Length: 353
Image (cartoon, rainbow, N blue to C red; front, top):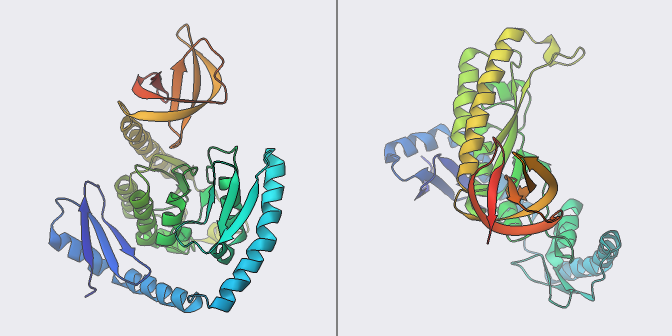
């Protein structure tokens, strides 16, 4: 039996985390019995061992850099980062006053009040896309960075932690799921399972306060039984997404799935789709209601006329759509206030301070 540590909170779901040292942490609701937690861990023993092996491989493949290696990273940073800063500064029309390379471990980059940039040499050990994100993040003139769709396996403890240290990152993450049933995921040839996916969601919720997590789901994939669909339905409700994009499986000639047996009838696909659309609508409302009475900041974008009144609508960092009643042109303006009530089905009224 795997040793593990339990962290209880006012969460709804149980999630597993294997940190970089290989230690196992179970994040569980306050009242969940210890026996149920133990059963949950036992059920996911295989996944835990796989994650621990991945951490061992990662440590073996990414040992602490030697002084010579650190110097090589520094030289690489001094060559590459000024080039990327110059490119993005030109795109954004800004002029940083200087660039400094340090050996900082806790943060990849920063920008001083005098618009001088500072980057860690360890940033060079990460993929090019990560370097681009950090450079854009630190340049003056960009207030928000919203990520696109993410591969579930990219969400590690280190990834979520470092991302949470970038204040311009919007806590809105789209993790494509496709199915909440492992047997269906296996037929889809996905390289993750539901436990791994749930662990990624738990990490994002650990490092970000009430993040918006959205996803894609396919219903009616060949061979999907009623029991498998119900497993997916329960899983989706447990994860509790902000938004779900529901797709009915569409048969395409020449693909492996098109030749699979037990194709699901169109009427069944439609029924399952309608069930998940209703579930998604309810979960989205519950997510947005969390912000009623709370202070939020929204970036307003466009004029909106409703019930004889003029508003400007925009989005919070969590992608909640809000409206401010005004006679002014507030396009491309940040406004801070309190969400008071629901204006329409998907727009909440923000009252400025």
